[in-house]
Amino acid sequence: MSHPHNESPVNPLPPAVVVIFLILAGVEVALLLGSRGLIGGDNAIGWRIGLIEDMAFVPKIMAWMLETSQYPLTHVKRFVIYPFVHGSFTHGIFAMVILLAMGKIVAEAMGQFAFVTLFFAASIVGAVAYGYTGAKPVLIGAYPGAYGLIGGFTYLMWLKLGEVGEPQYRAFQLIGFLLGIQLLFGMLFGSDPTWIAELVGFATGFLSSVALVPGGFAHLVSRLRRG
Image (cartoon, rainbow, N blue to C red; front, side, top):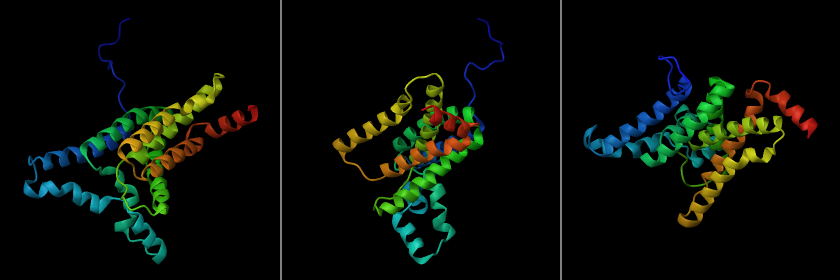
């Protein structure tokens, strides 16, 4: 089968996905080069630590804001910017892979506004839920937002399987697999409660998709009536 010469063999990524990916990748590349002394001089070795101190979501800070009813921008912004700094280059890479894979599907099916909404809504709600645990480890990384995109993907699959009469529980196989991997790693190497933010991020993405998918609410009502 012939294809036009000017047709790209790979479907281009939606611009919103590319922008968020480039921000994540740009931060990680800069930190990697700095840690190896290739840019930034001697001070670059501490860039990652400095960014974590300035950007990480800290449960104690949220508790302080709620107790004092003070919400300075320097701390409120942490709910939104913590996804853009990771504990290591490898930590960031896995988040970016999920973002690209799930982001492309979600943005193409729901639109770029829905993609951005899911990513940041899952990040914010996941952080709030994590803050209420009172856990000591800070929350960093794009994983809660990425899990929100997995939630959106799961909702799309849930609808599709319902339309073709297939068992809809199969839509949750991906999140089940990821949680199983986390459980295994937790048993082998220990874990921290940041998985709570990721699970809440997934739930946020799934539930938000009801409103963000074109005709999503009508599809949901129809499926519930038939079920």
